[in-house]
Amino acid sequence: MLVGGVRAAGELGLSRGEFARAVQLGIVRAAGPPASGGAARYARAELDRVRSAESRLGTEWPEALRERVATVGGAEAAGVLGVGPSRFTRLARCGHVVPVGYRINRYRAVVWLYLASELREFAAREPTMLRGVAPPADRELMVAKADLRPRKWRGRHVGLLLRRTADPWERAAVLASVLPEEELRQAVPDPAERIVLAALAPPPPYGHPQVPAAAAVALPLLKAEPPEEIDWYRTSLDFALRGARGQSKSTGESGPT
Image 1 (tube, one colour):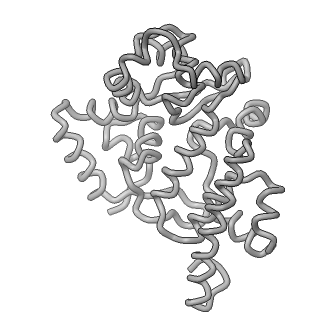
Image 2 (cartoon, helix red, strand yellow):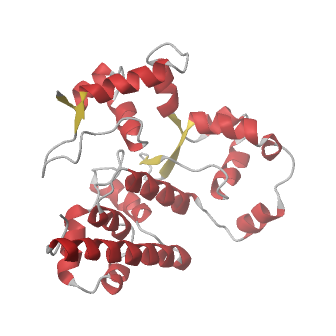
Image 3 (cartoon, one colour):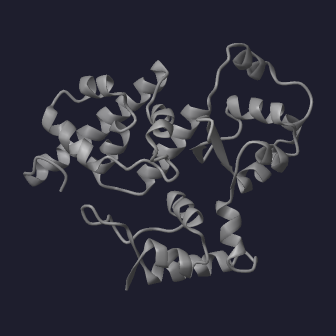
């Protein structure tokens, strides 16, 4: 039996946002790709599996699952690490902790979100990073006004999307979605292939704003920016497309099968 996302969230004791995060992280798996224009569906057996797996963690249900998907941002994230806001900002900008999502606040500023469980793990694993002077590499990044948060988030987001599909064309579409338009045109000169990739492109992540002014702030976060990052995605896309084209050639189809 298949159920929709709202019902699945209720059966797992999660809010809409918590359930969306659980799906994003691969904790809850959809029952195959949704029909065109339709919402994802979830098998009751999958919900039973999640409940059973989380119950074995020894925390009263559904608190174990809620703890795994809980996110914090800003001062709250610094509080989880037990450091001041300025130190947390440096740790985040230098890539020591990686965002799992974002939101745009009323001042149209990006608020990065972190898994509270990962912050606690980082604090236990790297206690020396929470006190004392910044290491030389961090000082160089801060002098250069570097901010690795967008790139780190994109890498994580793309990785999570790739793990949710084995279809070669869908995987290529995930990689293509991160490239700026001009880079994509150069990487995929065939207009027919670009149409296929656009049709299979993943939707914006949960929490991406719908209000135009806020969406305009968030949109650049979805696209690769540093040249070396763009080159990495172009190389990965080229490799993925070779596999996708090979599949299409073997089946006699000109697109995803």
